[in-house]
Length: 169
Image 1 (cartoon, rainbow, N blue to C red):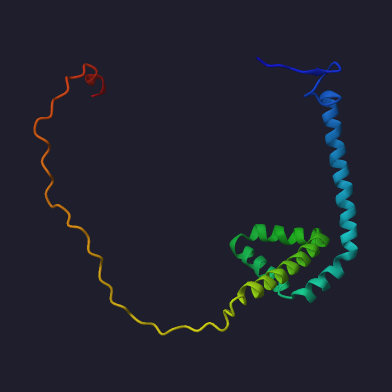
Image 2: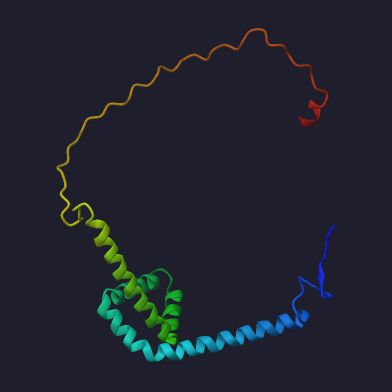
């Protein structure tokens, strides 16, 4: 049994205005999102040169790494590589923000490497390798496996024949 609760003569699950209200709300949401992205685009358009310079100052390796990733994409699937290049040009302000955030991420990753790598005085650069020694190994001893299959137990009672067995043959 399904119960519907009415408060003030209106169903709780109902959106104000019905289907038309939902449609108008969706249109307002799309228009508001458009204006929000447009304002962010113009703001980043003015900040893009500064973001690129800051990205180069923070970690210049972002630019060659991005270029290598793009070339790798061009080798594996040229169409998606060209589409990503076109998007990077069309939404250049967002791409410059991406490069800036990537440079910040590289810097944070480097800080974490230094912090956790130097904890016990151990760094990868100072790692010393030992000489290679070949050690003879012998297989572990395994329990003896019986070579013969044990015979079945002698007096096993036979089941009565099922009349439905002929249907499955």
